[in-house]
Image (cartoon, rainbow, N blue to C red):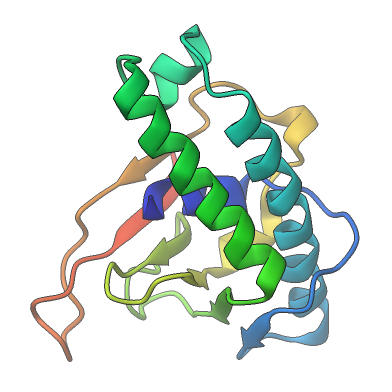
Length: 159
């Protein structure tokens, strides 16, 4: 589910702001994060309603089965609810901290539900209209943080 949330968060484009917990960001970065979350809310709602045995489903989630589709739909609805309720935390990270590399857009840790660390490259992401299939890929697990060796992160970065 963290991968779903991270991917939806990152491919979101500006829209109406949603009040969320945004830390260590400039005013402009905060506005971009809130706009992305607002758009992500709409995308997750639409995606949960469109779960079906399609090529797009297979590309994102693997082989379609009724049981698997119920899990995917429930995860998407959980992401939607988290964004809608303001439970999402976003932290602007710098290159060299956590999972933030020069080509990284964002990363998450499994023990921090609904916390997304955005890297500087996040703010240079293209709009949805200019994305091509395969532009992004999820990398995981990432090397652990030095202060907590047992933690792993998932990372989204350029292909």
